[in-house]
Length: 446
Ligand code: NG1
Image 1 (cartoon, rainbow, N blue to C red):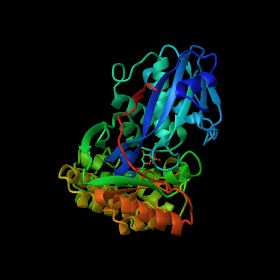
Image 2: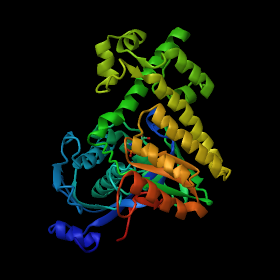
Image 3: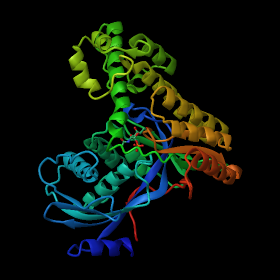
Image 4: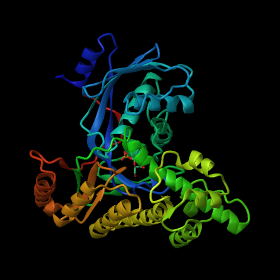
């Protein structure tokens, strides 16, 4: 479809009114993986790759969705009553999530619909947050239909909080990193994000290094097959939190109210990381723990533990390795805080080292790496990167690399040849780009 987004919209929705356009950027996470849903910090940045939408409101409550990319079929739903999710993998779920989330929190008197045409230059399934960018874009479309303006009527952080909750509608048990950076990101800066309550601190990006993104080319579509894999870590962390709570309650002789692992640091206990590590070792046995042992510690029936916490999490080696997940949390929390300080001190060598440690922990404690991601990070380090790690949910997708400015050309050439050429046996352009930041989501003139 040639032409501007507005022209494409007019061709796709001949009877709709004049559209407005909005954009929502993708993001790459520098460090802080699988910590957000535990209330522990992250350090992502926006990208210039983005989703753009043209939208016009409809009074009849119908939401009509079209996409310039033929891989996404035209879909529609009615914005009435409680919205139910479509089957996993159906892209209307992201619009349903945004509309349902706003309805739930703002309880608007009218429930308008909208016509929406989307186009993106952001790859999906690459760990660059195309799903949350779409949710945010759809939320801006619905706010426009409701006559609400971002910032004047609803702050960026309030909307980010609503949408983080709303995206769980899609079936993933994620945290709030993506929606927050997509809405509150800024040019030239990464965002150190803290949760409960949501806070964003701008951190200047290093000027002696480039942030280079390399796509492993292994797709990790969280809305599809990777969903159960992704959910495994949040579920094991929540179960770990319940075991920690049981341990604390026994030690204190009364119930200690710990809702999420982050509460150990920020809540009434204010533990140090060393104290948290020692507590984890008391609360959870080393290695793969059988369900019967977990149930005994929680004083619950095994079926109840499965129904409440584990759901579809597969049994490995006769049990669940919960302590490894908890150890990732203490290490990654410390790494994010140290990475933020290193960026403030313009110390790229330390930032790179922390990124490497983060990758190792994602691989060894969370089991979210793949042979391709491991090989790609190894080659990246041999090609001049100071730091290389998987970024986003894992199970495929991209790596993020910190590369000294004067080594970028050699890095791109060497990784292109050794990973994409020799390791994958691929011809053609390597899917590598230098990450550039862009402003947070909002209206755009096209
Ligand atoms: P991506 O990489 O966009 O799938 C997911 C979660 C984040 C965070 C990361 C891992 C959603 C929408 N996103 O991101 O909240 O947990 O994984 O750090 O669930």
